Image 1 (cartoon, helix red, strand yellow):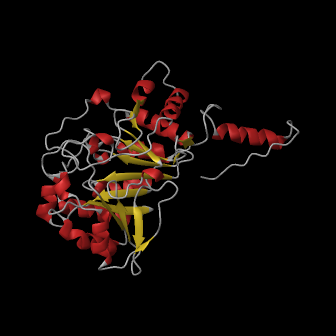
Image 2: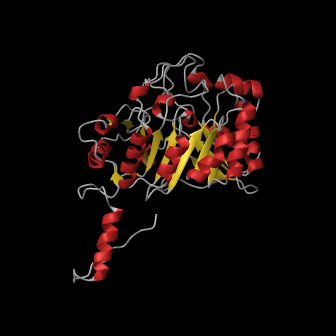
Image 3: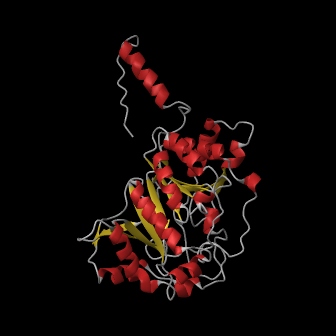
Length: 366
């Protein structure tokens, strides 16, 4: 974003002052003077990153993310594309500089490219990203890039066709790899792979996955499984692989140099560089080395529920505001500001078989 510096002179009648005031009004249109220029929570963390879910539906049923037989949100309860745009605009007006579209699988939402075009025009938004399973990217990567999407994250947990199918229940590995290659060729500012490693399931593929990313010159992040939703397909405690285990395994092949803590509107991954590659390896460690003290983000579910923390149920109902008598941008911004004042300090994930958070990741907004 290009900053605008307003320098007021003592002579209120000068053309320069009139121009400055006109630019200032245009830049802050729709914002009340009572709203802050940035969202800051009670722990002095600046919230500049919104993860906006556009659907809870998905064409996969990944074993760590969803049950095989899912109940989805009834369509009347789902935010319309226009409502999603209103939510995004309200957050950008309050200082959010990065929006990531999530799901479910975002690309199953009808006319998603139209929404991307609208969000890509929001003044002040610096990054518009998307997380995908890659199954539809072969056809949609270029239109998304042309619509204004700047970055894409793609889930890839295995390079073995049958194992990939078992982990995703419905996934076609060849289609996902075609989607990854289409994303790399589309010219996004960044393409990153995300992998969830489960002990005894795919922990023997860590080096292969890093090599796959290196071949394409893209980043890869390894994510510790998050205890969201009740599953019976596997034991989360027995399948847990810590970031430290994976980092040691990778460092034995390629020495890793830490980049330090994430900054700005970056996500929670802690990245490491390899001397002989442009690719970076990241680790997202909600269990072993949580990132709560750096939290700069909130989530909005496809129902319009503003989730203040991944691992807590603190929330605010933005759909009620959107569909209420006063569904104005000012009312929406007021609800957001009030909610941020209740953002908790941290989550408390455990390996208990009965999770504290019963909503699945697809309902949370991945």
